[in-house]
Length: 332
Ligand SMILES: [Zn+2]
Ligand SMILES: [Zn+2]
Image (cartoon, rainbow, N blue to C red):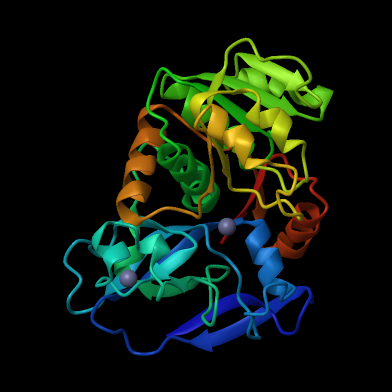
């Protein structure tokens, strides 16, 4: 079968039409007819070879939603016609301690949907069915797409930092990741404080469920000591100031990676109130299913800008310039 895709032929190039053939399906693989695919900053890092793992031609796309068209001989949990989503990860060993604990995302043999293989910017995607997740009926495909990377990233980070309900949660940044984090935290019954540098985003933060918005760095105290603070930005911030907003046993967790080391944090600062600093990458398969169910149940939805696939390069330029409010989704 021929797949009509969009690929960067060389590093940092605009995407062009690119056709490739599927290879014969292995027993757990399936072919998905792509309906929508989000554009994530990681796609751009891969196009640019920022992580030195890119192989060209490179077909980006790891927030895929589509319909299963073909299944391998041992696929029993999915059928032709099922609507599924695929995120950043699409392979693991299934045998190591991490995999057996349901942390496939931590598996040393994990495979990415777009590293050394072609991703979802195309008519179809050939992929391991064990990393295809049924999309609940309530979620429109374009809305579900960003949940598969941005959504699971913030959801898993909050859960592993201890979020259930009744907590006071701080979210730093209210962009593509942050506005989803606010929704998950608020709709699961937590009080949310948003830290933002943009005064014009205050209203948006409140509309997404925040009950307090602090513009600029947190000079005074938040109304309530926070149990968890999630950083979704990629900036060097005044971390000791944020740590001082945490309640005892509180956690500062990172999904956004600041450029510098945390050299301003003295361990004594953590010790006095038994604080933790952690970071979290995507989520395992069980948590992806849980996240999708919660998003459907609580009507959690990213704010998206849709583009036909013919305008993919324009959409990528907007993502590069941080001009998309708040996640870009291509329709194929
Ligand atoms: Zn991503
Ligand atoms: Zn493993």
